Length: 152
Image 1 (spheres, rainbow, N blue to C red):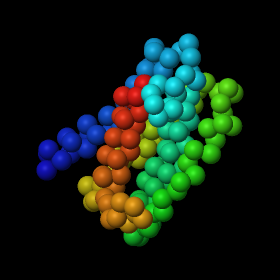
Image 2 (tube, rainbow, N blue to C red; image 1 turned 90 degrees about the vertical axis):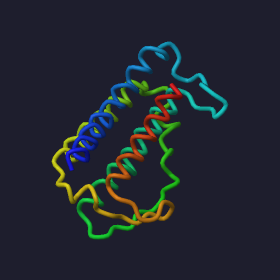
Image 3 (cartoon, rainbow, N blue to C red; image 1 turned 30 degrees about the vertical axis):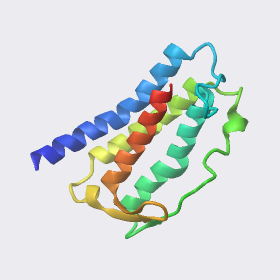
Image 4 (tube, rainbow, N blue to C red; image 1 turned 90 degrees about the horizontal axis):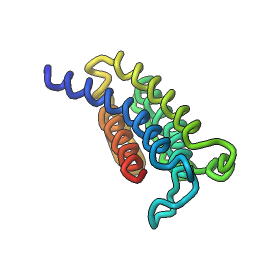
């Protein structure tokens, strides 16, 4: 059981730290040009930052709250998570966007730290992923952020 507690403690640390790492990567490597494509996907630092904030705001944070507060929630997949990409372009820097993302991750980290052992195993049904636990959602969210960190 100690191993599970230690794994979750490290998971929460990484979950929070990835937001700091994203800000540092943009400040260090991309402070001169936020809009240049990084790869053949068309992603730029600006696009990555707004995407991460939107996904966190519209999906992962609400999912976390629903998993903890509803009995057997059914989560829908939303394809409209990139709505504000153009709205924010040129008006807000990726660093400012990711600072909001950091704040959300800090809030989520506080919630996760306070969870009981049973809460981590709460299940949810998702249209695409099927039945998953809260722990899986945290791991999934972390992997998603780490993939974008690698892009930067």
